[in-house]
Image 1 (tube, helix red, strand yellow):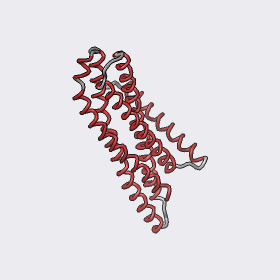
Image 2 (cartoon, one colour):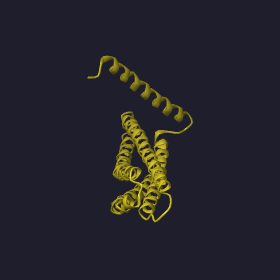
Image 3 (cartoon, helix red, strand yellow):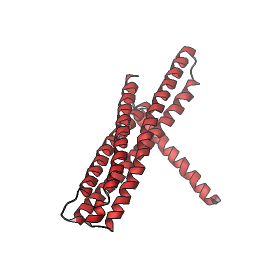
Image 4 (tube, helix red, strand yellow):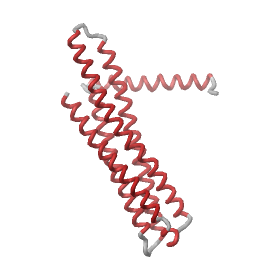
Length: 216
């Protein structure tokens, strides 16, 4: 059970975070940058993180392929390179998730503000036009978010499989153990192929959403 002291601290923290976010939006609006602009910028960041992650997972797969194709040399070096690619893949996945969360945050704030502003219109025709634009924007955004989330969900199984194989190699640095990983490679390759495919779609959907937002 959460104590009253902890609840009080959490409440203060939430108010502080909301206040910081509001101050950020206010500061940006002072220089002519509104939530709509921030959303476009964050979708661009999310797209770039998907592109980076896509390349990183391809690199990790190539390194794993070189492991199962090992035919001589320093086993420690082979393991260390795979460990490095796994660590880089974890970092890339975390960045993708962080970027998506930032997109979700500003989109929620934008749509809430937009809906509230509809109540302030005195001109019904203009209000209806704005309401229609809000609905269409939310539909396009929902399509984008589904695409981003689909690609994001592909990453944990890939990372889990890579981690299993890295841990296995850590304590089994011998040619026989490496040979036993060939079947593992096929499964990981299949999952990464699906991940890359979904990321390509998320990138394309991001480009489409950005273009639509910029066209007004």
